[in-house]
Length: 262
Image (cartoon, rainbow, N blue to C red; front, side, top):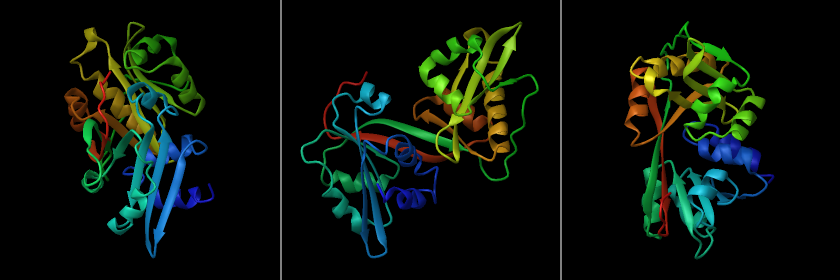
């Protein structure tokens, strides 16, 4: 545990690239196996999170034993990190670099199950707020059905607001028609998520307006915005790119066992 501040410092030099590791270190330091490998000036970081610790992993990867995260400064430390992986365990590797997958593929039979793209703001890009949107720092019950439509439950939404989250929404005649949340992911990075527009109000660019405005307020608070989408969610990708966001990192999930996806 005494190694965690040094690990966070090293990962924090590129927070968007290493956001998954930073988030898990913040949320689950007491249940993870945390390893720092050092060889001269080179280092490697390996995190082993029990699959039952995080609700998403427990639901999606229920057959797995551990979720594996890694980062290293040089491939020369990779073999030492490899020795720290549990033998004959069912593993999910969440990898932010293709070279990590290539190195692991020499020792594991890997199967890709998911890929995500994280978008963020390029330097100098202006994101104005939309005057028709409504900013709220507490839960508006009219928005709950829209958030739940994106698989967010009221327990996690409540926790987000307790940690300072806010919503940006559009109402038409008092009815919520489009919304998103901005909430803390790590110390520096805030997530723009739970984006949803009701069917009757689509194709009016309302989602672009609420996301753009959420980014405006996130940047004004001094945080780095992150918009995270499945690699095959073309509507969300189009939304991100239409307002000027740029890909920052791609995170892929690889497994060394067979599974039936939910």
